[in-house]
Image (cartoon, rainbow, N blue to C red; front, side):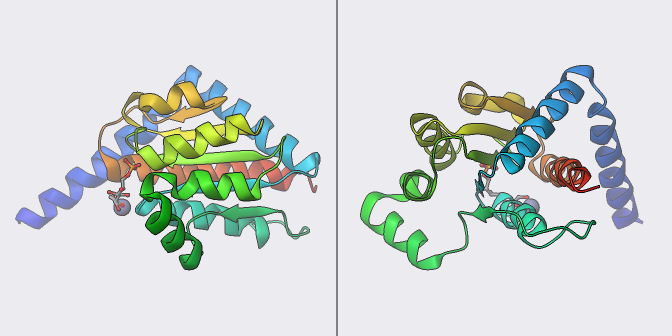
Length: 191
Ligand SMILES: O=C(CO)[C@@H](O)[C@H](O)[C@H](O)[C@H](O)COP(=O)(O)O
Ligand SMILES: [Zn+2]
């Protein structure tokens, strides 16, 4: 039946994109990202994360793995998703424009040495780019999660985890896997 074909095609596409994560350049970038995240936590600095739509959910999901727990019992870790405070989101968007919704929060909440993580499947959402730009101005470290070659995000990320794919849904599925890998690296600090 038609639906079955569609389902199998989607699962197959997912598997094909998973296979691209073994590319040496990406494995190196994941290693660098894990170092960045663990150094941030070990150094007592914090992690700020943002993205739009499904990536907003991913930002919240990953932040919650740090403040709550991933697998290991350990202390709560300082991570904030910049996608949850409806008062800040509406006030900043209303007063300064949606393109500044993350940048303004980064300006308000981050300090030098913090890690700012931007998630964008296109790599070119204006508010995400401005958020990373602000992070750089404040001397935070920046980590980008992208697809589609990384777009302008590439130039604004100290480390870029780019999924070699152009389908938003598949990129998002890889992003959450990559996020979990980073959580796993952090858990290892507490062994
Ligand atoms: O979840 C999905 C599609 O799977 C959508 O909500 C998607 O996240 C939105 O269209 C976002 O606005 C896309 O932004 P970006 O990933 O290009 O930065
Ligand atoms: Zn989605």
